[in-house]
Image (cartoon, rainbow, N blue to C red; front, side):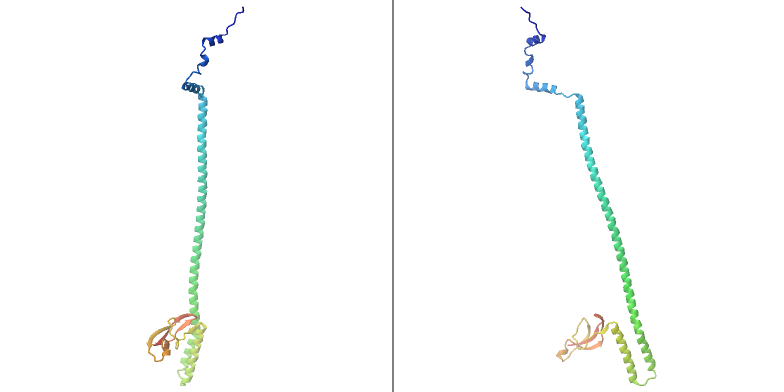
Length: 225
């Protein structure tokens, strides 16, 4: 009969038949503990994981800093643009103000020059009439004919009225007209029996004049009532 060879591994299994059932008969807590022990990470892997987390954190931090830096640059550019625009507007305002001030001074000077020139023209135009008066006075020293004297004064008067018309100076019509406060100044009111004369100018004590449509002297009148 042949001798059967015994395998040591089979012998161990035979000696300990519960060897294969050790983990099968563990409680859930024990089984979980065994799995955790099997899943334990080595120190090197844990170190690598921490380094990755650290890199990820600093990466997010750098991105945020870059974003803030970009926003700051944009705001700085906008501020510089607005500051430049403000300076340009301020320069334009100063230029316009200076031009307006110069225009105002120039127009004021022109008005004064115009007034002076207008006065000069009137005076120069009056000088020949003064000459006529002087000649008339000198001629009347030994004059005995009153008619000649009257004719001389009438000539001077007509010359003066024509000069006033040349400067658009006209007499304000008053006598017989309805009293108008825009043209007349009532010095007194006089009772009148004529109904048609009531509220009208019945006499003129001082003539009024106007240049074109502007009254330069109101006519002083007596108004009927």
